[in-house]
Image (cartoon, rainbow, N blue to C red; front, side):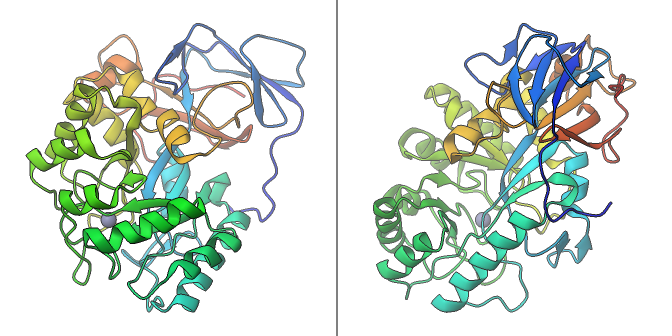
Length: 389
Ligand SMILES: [Zn+2]
């Protein structure tokens, strides 16, 4: 399917009715007692029926916000040089992901490391993905990776160029605590979000970042607290969940045992709202279109977290901690909506019970900005029920 350069929201008023289970993405109230959603010009405007131009019958499916992958490494287009693979973003939309946050365009072959080149790359990546949305996907890119010779003026120039997030500290030459703390300090003053690689090197040439480094720098997001892919010791994961001030992120391309350790430690410290999910895709472990669904299901099954709360870690939590509109089924939010059900053949009375057993949901359709972008998913097992448009 061709991507559109100007991807405008759906126009007019739409009603989604006959919703079996309405999952809001909001940890404070993850299940909403309503069976319909009213949408106007691609934005959610209510939970009751009204005069509309068109209707979608959810056929009893559950709906949830489109998942937000808190940690990705896009380059340009729907191509990744990491695995030399085409169409990874489109396939992730089939896996219920509607938004992708870049943690750095680090896989670009021959990527520049000088200040001018790094800033230029970030600007081009950001602008390209604003104009290029594979089947409607929202890729928030342009995340420059800090190097030791970049001074405060460099970060001020990023801000002036419209770049409000940097890539992972630790993927470049800035990796140790004091160097990283200088960068996070400047960025905090300038209103730029900071994220920091945590754990062993991801690939030859990147660096080990320890819990001590993270605690000294106090980034806004502790990127892949469960390693990307190599984890710090479990005791250090627990220390970070207690003392790191930023959001705590676990990824699919990480250590699954450490992801559960981190989730339990976040819960024990009353910090589930700080717990975010991502994939780190494309990564050494490849591109898994169902990676986000697998992470949510991991928390709901091995982690024992109620599935409706696990979904919040991939939706509303990311929305709030990272300052983006989408990720909540609430008034005034974009109508980025996933229709899902338990997969055919799964026991459990609904999709939440299926997930608690460790089965990923079947995705019946994905809507972005009020427009249906997929029918039955090409990447998940078949949903027991799908919506009819
Ligand atoms: Zn990383």
